[in-house]
Length: 458
Image (cartoon, rainbow, N blue to C red; front, side):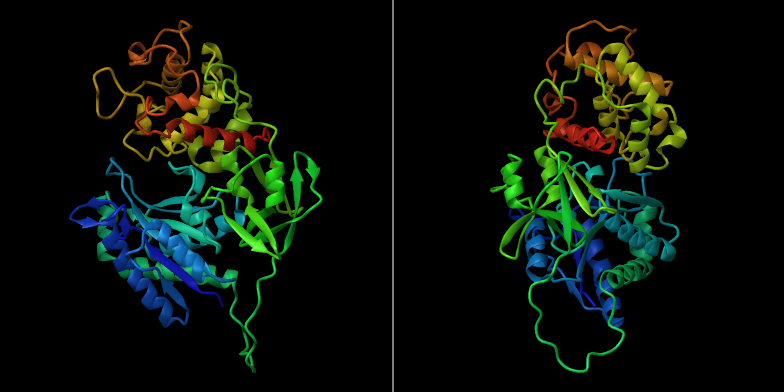
């Protein structure tokens, strides 16, 4: 049976200082997760599992290196966090997995449901691909050799969740132990009978092959599947015109004297990556590049249908369409009226609202899908009487940045007249303008790429 790695997020050294994580209610994220982690370790060992606890003084990068240096086939890894929001009513547990990996998604669901069975008072915030985060990816999910998940056990900024973490810690730990045990046994089942004689130390693992489809054509060389992820030969990456030689975020392995690159990591280099489980084929498409003035131009027409927008939204939040069944129609109509690419506006909405979960300060009843402020600086942001007007305001604000053309409809965006017209015609130029985040526009483009992949346009 494989081993289990567990990391309590934060507490290590980042840039020369100790990182406590969120600091709320007289405690820290690091403290609460370390205490919970210690109970998990004790219980798993009592059940006969081999568990390795990541040292608390390591940085995030050192944590990855520590696990990778010790990992072997059959191992799994979990990092536990708490979340924090400006809105104290947000609460619950969530698990993040590497995007487009159905096996890892199922493992995330196993872990989450095991916790909620032990602690039913914790709300279920669902399992989510790591691309749904503000960063667009999670290093812990992507840069480990072994299958890895990142869990937000609770929301530290919510008093009820904080009470559960501090007063029902054993039940929380037991739930995670149940989930980890099931996950570990599904990856590496225990040997039902003892081995009668010692076995020699095994050599390098043998990985199953997979087919590679490049822009609709089967590639002559095969890839391999490692821990549920497709890897492709580095020579193929070079043929695609992608240079990953100096990128530390791209995962590589050497197998039978050939260097392979994890296919999903190529998405950040404008390569579309999809997986067909039935055909055991990873498909790479490089025909749609992010070219300034084309893919990322705010003014223009979208390329998706309403159904494609709805399917993308539902895939990321099944409950989204219950409250906003016409949201895709609104974006197509309002964007087309003002000549704004509704695909970009829709992707921005997904980023701002966490796919209509409204995990931040803005509440659903505000119908504020773009994180718009008011002309008076209200801390809660702007509010609109209907979803249509909320979409219209976002479209108008995008148009203010995109060009100097007059509005077709009456202005409803409270800050339309404060924008220097036409200063940001490309999505990337919204960085540090629409939001303080210097990667804000890049994160919108990351969502847009996922939308086009799901619609089969990339």
